[in-house]
Structures are given as C-alpha cells and as structure tokens.
Length: 209
Image 1: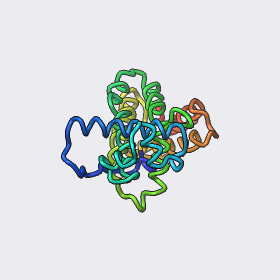
Image 2 (image 1 turned 30 degrees about the vertical axis):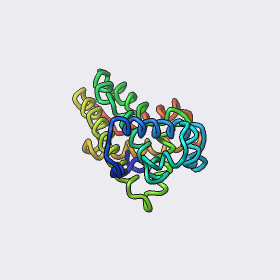
Image 3 (image 1 turned 90 degrees about the vertical axis):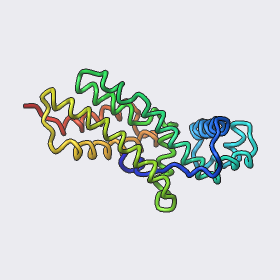
C-alpha cells in the first residue's frame, strides 16, 4: 500500500529461534489481531494482549521487547496472510474488470473493525518515530502494487488503454484506495460502496482502442 502501508520491517530476533518459540510468537500476534478487531489500537495495552491469549505480560516480553514490537509483528503477519495465494486468486479471474474489482475487494478493509487496517492507521501516524512500521509497509506495498500492475496489464492485453504507464496508474489507484479505506474504517462508507467508488475511478484510468 502506498501511504499507511508505506514501509515496516521485521523485528530482529533477540533470542535464538525455535519451532516452539515461533509457535508462541504466532499465538501472540494472532491474539493481538483478535484483540485489535474488538477495540481501538490505543485501547489495547500489552496487558490486554497478554490476557487475551492467557499469558502474563512479562511472558509476552520474553518473545517481543515491547508492545510496539508486537504491533509491528502483528501487522506483518496480517499482511503475509493477505498476500498468501492472492496473486493466484486474481489471475484466476479472466474478465479484466472483474479482476480489478477482485483486487479492490482484497485491498479495502472488510469492515470498520479490520485489524490490519486499524494497525496501518496506527503505524501511519507513528511512522516518524517508529521506522519499522514504514519498512514492513514498504514490503507489503510492493506486493500489492505488483498484483495491481498485473491486473492492469491484463486489462491492456484485452484492449484497455491506460491514461499513463502501468506503475503510475497503479500508484494513483492505491493512493485512492487508501483514502477510501479510511472512510470505511470511520463508518462513513460501507465496503460495497467503497468498491463502487473505486471502480468508477479506475474506469476513468482506462479507455479502449
């Protein structure tokens, strides 16, 4: 993504990795995403994360050095889950317009409580003080843009003419989607309406020979 999903990097491991430790980290980040779905990020302290998965706060700190590190790992985990199989799902949609609509659906929040998007808004606001949010988001942004560029190239192969080069159009579309996502999270726009708005804007980027 372009703005909230702008740049986030994985936390360097402070301890030797082990399958058991990796399983515990996964439990912590998945529990974090569940806790954040239920309430605002600011209202989810480390103690609440720990309680949600039945651990003491100092046990969480055995695996992560801080609450911020947990949030960074959680958003990275969430993005990896979203990316898994996404390219294949999109390529399976033959109709160019439907493929673009499928991309928009994948990109926008599921609803007002989408935990990954809630974390991105938090990370966006704090990116000047926590560079790691920017680094992880940059990696996520590259994957999202690659999928959108592939969908746009598919449309071009079917006869569409873009208003600019593929990368420029993809960047503009993702910036637009970031704005729509914020309105979905705020409850101003329903996800279905967000898709309709986005597809109207994407249509203005496409012509036909």
